[in-house]
Image 1 (cartoon, protein in one colour):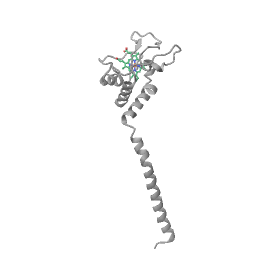
Image 2 (cartoon, rainbow, N blue to C red):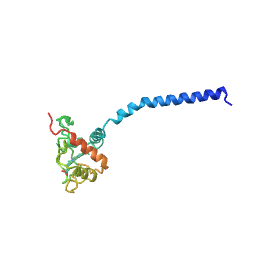
Image 3 (cartoon, rainbow, N blue to C red):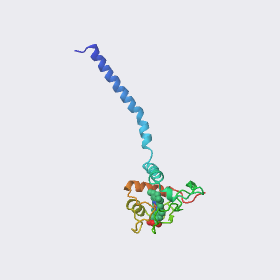
Image 4 (cartoon, rainbow, N blue to C red):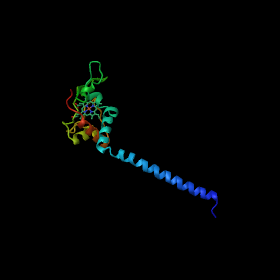
Length: 154
Ligand code: HEC
């Protein structure tokens, strides 16, 4: 037998259902706006983040001004190595090459360098460049970002 309180409960459930349905309807445009960010832009953003904030490629591959600060007007244009080892190391490199545009390297070169720590001909990368063992997607995101960096500055 239906009591007034069970009718009340049914009414409440129907009302709650309507509220949930209307909330979903209003969320749909937001979700599709997020989906319109192309995967490419997402990858480039992540590549920039990995390059600048995680692997910090810029620390060595961007030149510095007279006060030792990174000169971002020449981002990733290549730079003389600014750090020296505590113990002399014959193998220590003097120059970090330009990475902007990444035109000197194929994707395969980039993968080898960033995933295995080996140069394009299989040689071990010299210090102070790190021997990175990045995962494939991270390496690809960095490479995509480096290809998007302008090679000339004004
Ligand atoms: C601590 C300094 C330092 C950091 C950080 C650094 N590099 Fe390097 N990188 C160098 C130096 C120095 C060389 C030259 C090494 C050599 O001559 O073997 C080099 C070489 C390279 C090369 C050329 C390798 C070859 O054999 O031709 C590439 C490409 C490169 N770095 C990319 C990167 C990327 C991408 C990052 C960030 C993920 C990065 N580097 C971070 C210092 C650094």
